[in-house]
Length: 319
Ligand code: UDP
Ligand code: MG
Image 1 (cartoon, rainbow, N blue to C red):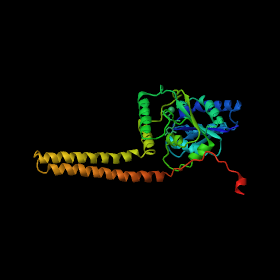
Image 2: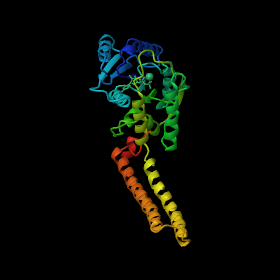
Image 3: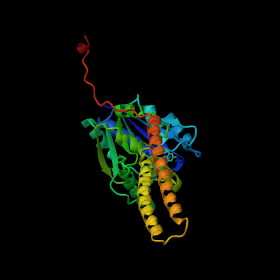
Image 4: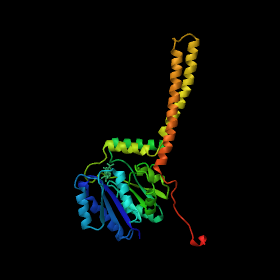
């Protein structure tokens, strides 16, 4: 039977933590009772540098119930880093891990299907929201725009999937080989390969408290997602330079024609021709530098060039 860990990032969630841990624990207990997971499965509550009573509640829970364990980060590092800390912590302690938000907006009952898929051999199971009815207009619109823009830039993201997902131990260990410090899990995990699938669920309202993602934090996350996956904006600069170069040729023909027709003021012809020509050369040069910066950027990230899914190796072959 597989040992499951559930990781829950919490940032100033004192209101939510009065209710949600018991609900998650009951779910884990019922899954263990029905033989779907082992009885030593556990829940890891991660305090992402909260300033309220979040850690007091977590430590109290850990003292009274061995299903819970806690991890306190020294300051607020953001949802993605809190999740990463959790994944690192559980990597060698479970067979599979499910990440879920503390506010229980994600459907706990979807965990059953996630485990079924894991048992069928899927290494990653993405939870995908059926609809965004519980989100306000701004959040719905900005999310759609974000997914559209990411796919335009050629980045693999799963639309309407946040961070409610199951990962096998193998997938977690592969993820930990990505050494980049600024990690955008929603982009990296779908790009890792491995056998994966999606399951749909209805997103609920928060059980208590308020969203910890202000517009500023959301914009930061979106910009971060775009810049940590795509160097296409840099290539765009070069193409803009090429476009300006063609415009400079056209403008050169036009100003020369005006000059020969005697329609131009003295000095205008040379001025316009050189402005366009120099402008296009400058933009193209920036684009070329951008290409190199893009290459340096991907080298610095030091992502693994491949992930191994399976190995067939017999000792006898060596002899
Ligand atoms: N969270 C976190 N660190 C942060 C912001 C949020 O660990 O800096 C946690 C938060 O406690 C919650 C989850 O991330 O468990 C999702 O946050 P929230 O529900 O506020 O986001 P929303 O659902 O509104 O997008
Ligand atoms: Mg939420």
